[in-house]
Length: 236
Image (tube, rainbow, N blue to C red; front, side, top):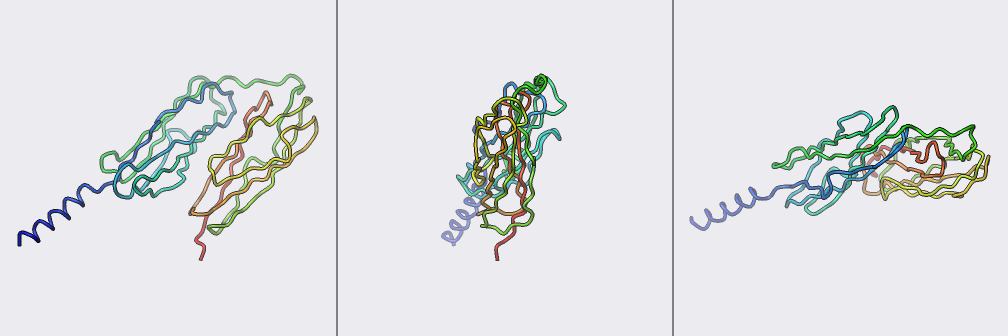
């Protein structure tokens, strides 16, 4: 009898201490100085430091100017994911402080709060269009329904509409599942290039939102973002 009682107590005690725990190493981020109209993104790394599965139930922002998207919603013990925050500075000036809230099944921390800030300066206007100017043919693309595991791609054209050479300084994606290939990083005035964006849907499900940001020497819009969407369905 005592043996069975000890086993029952052990199982009960084990169940009581088995619980998820949500954690983030750096809950705050400073974008520094940006110019009005810029879209900037940052990935917050989330980790399950508990000993049972962590379920992210809701992610939302304190302002409609901020879009948030978790890469994964279920984390096993020790597993990591990222929450991408995209801030649209259009119509905003001065110091901007925004918050992101993550709800989960962590019994000790039902809501995790993240924070970022930016110092939004007035847009720098080009004089008589004498500088370089990056013009995108599309700022977003929706792949629609895509079966999990499939790699889909889209080609988006871009052009130098200015009077000086356009230089693409950097290209950043919000997720490793997205790859970008540029036909050229330097365009002469009036010249056009192509950007091929590939999205790998392996091990993903549901609605997906990812971004590709181009950084250039365009003085008016030094960073421009393309947002891609997909609805990942089960591959039967």
